Amino acid sequence: MTTFALDSSAVLAWILQERGRWKLVDAVLNEADADPVLPGPVLTEVIVTAHRRGNTSSAQHISDTLTAIGMRVEPAHDADLLRAAELIELSDGHPGKHGLTAERTTLSLGDALILAVTERLGVKILTKDRYWTQFAANGHTRVGIVQI
Image (tube, rainbow, N blue to C red; front, side, top):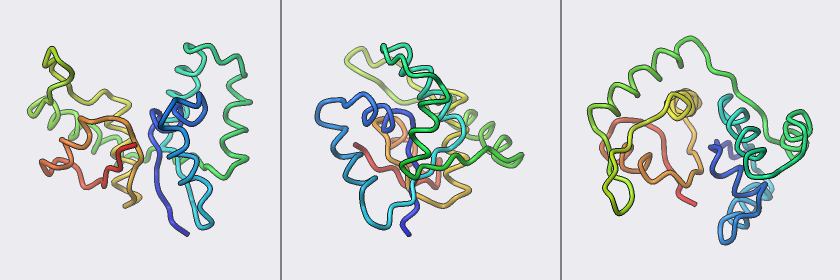
C-alpha cells in the first residue's frame, strides 16, 4: 500500500472537477495500491468550501462519498496540536509571498494541523498550496509536498 495524504485543495479539485487538476488527483486515487488519508481538518474544509462553491450534497453525503472510495480520516492527536502551534510560529517568522501583489502568506490553523498530522504519519501530501512547497524547501516541515 502507498499511503499519502490529501489537503482540501486536492480533494476539492477532484470533487469539483477543476480543469487540469482533478484528473491528476483521480489518477493517484485510482492506483492499485493507493491508501489515501485525510488529516481531520481537511474533511471540514472540503465540506464548507464545496458548499460555498455550490455543491448541495449534505455534509454526511460528502463524507460518505470520500470514505466509500477508500479515503480515511486521521484525527489530530495531542502531539499534533503542539506541533501545529510550532508550525504556525515558524510560518509567522518565515512568511511567503503570494501572487502579483506579493501578499504575505503564512499557515492558517487548519494548514498547520494538516501538516502536523501528515508529519506524524510520515507520508507525502498532495496540494495546490505553493507556500507549503516553500515552507518545506526551507526545512520548516518534514512533509513531502506534491504539487498538483
